Amino acid sequence: MKEQLLQSPVFHMAATQFERVADFLELGEEIRERCKWPKRLITVTMPVRMDDGRTEVFFGHRVQHHLSRGPVKGGLRYHPSVDLGEVAALAMWMNWKCALMRLPYGGAKGGIACNPRAMSDGEKERLTRRFAMEMLPFIGEEVDVMAPDMGTDEQTMAWIVDVYSTYAGHLVPGIVTGKPLELQGSAGRKAATGHGVAFLASRALNKLGIQAPGATAVIQGFGNVGYYTAETMSGYGIKVNGISDVTGAIWNDGGLEIRALHNHVLETGGVAGFGEAEAIDPGALLMQECDVLVPAAVERVITKDNASGLRCRVLAEAANGPTTPEADAIIEERGDIYLIPDVLCNAGGVTVSYFEWVQNLQRFQWDEREVLTKLETMLEGAFERFQQYVRAEKVSHRMAALFLGIQEVARVKQVRGLFP
Ligand code: NAD
Image 1 (cartoon, rainbow, N blue to C red):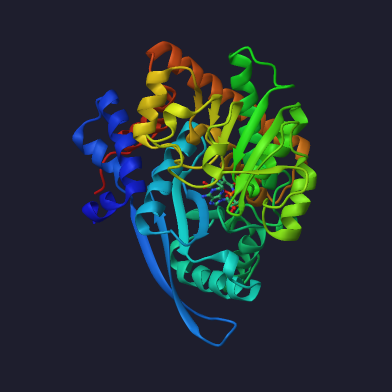
Image 2 (tube, protein in one colour):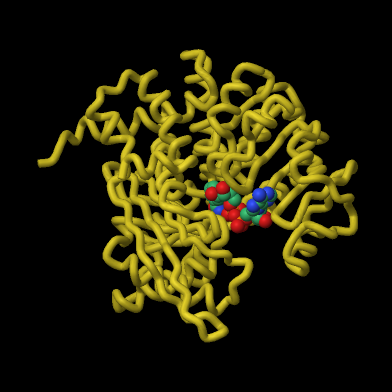
């Protein structure tokens, strides 16, 4: 199994990052192995009746990296490229992220290999309900709490609440986060990840002495995270010149009108063809001059082939794992890009998920202002700890963010000892 996981390029990348930090921390072999490998890897097959009468069998995975610090927490992804290695890597990153943010969670991730863009709502509902049923023995408010990720949304979470609650015999809203408000979702959750990305990008600009109003940004991905990042940045006066998604990339020198673009995407399914912009090559988009570059789509898009050509001042990693270790080395060597590593940059999502879970357990609701204020306070705290660590230890931004998370997990493993 170890070898199988390491053959996955995404898991290999997460494991390489982990080993670098473990070496730096001089972690002993025993703690190192316990921190690195996931506790539970669950793979299920799901036969689903499709609209045309066929039965299609889908593969789904849930990886619970470790349960030492509390229930595991992490998104559920629907994408054709999903495999066990990718899910295990994403679970590992969730781990360090929760620990970095000092949330009482371990990390997890789930995914189903499917193309949600080519499926009807009915097919997605049947697939989700079947997955939730298969997961019943492995999840729970105190065990594993899912959330939306790429290709899934509030509706997906609502179906999971329904399946779990039907089996429990009563409503269990805390079984997932990122659910609709009608089912005791949290105000501010939908916007949380993007809001956090924009907030931290503005803090990084501030450190570089660049004013947010009038600064420029380019965003790859215009789903939940990309949209709310763009929306919040616009609110700060940052001009978002370029945006891409699976349908193409667009550019406007004067800044894109984000709400109008969002409406266009709701109507047509993608950013391509937006009237108030010109088309641009999606690869070239990443190389445009800007103050903030935000990869907010998939993994491994900043590579050794394009890292030296980036022309941004801040690289805000909204997506998980967008930068390969080879590209990291180039960015470190260049020294002119302020990297906000993924485990910090997109932590707004899991932080507000935590708030949602706490509200559910207490049967209490906070308003959006309270949620976003608490979020900014927690992000500011993590950002300051990260900055201090970079200054004190003179390490790269990637190392500092991972160090703060991994050290926390290693300490808990150490103090809990070995069972039996
Ligand atoms: P989403 O499905 O809502 O949107 C994904 C977007 O990326 C879509 O616009 C899609 O068209 C685009 N995309 C996909 N492949 C692309 C490519 N090759 N080039 C350009 N665009 C591409 O997903 P999301 O929830 O916005 O998640 C995006 C990223 O953020 C993922 O890496 C996810 O793990 C991470 N993330 C999400 C959350 C969350 O709260 N949703 C939290 C933390 C991290």
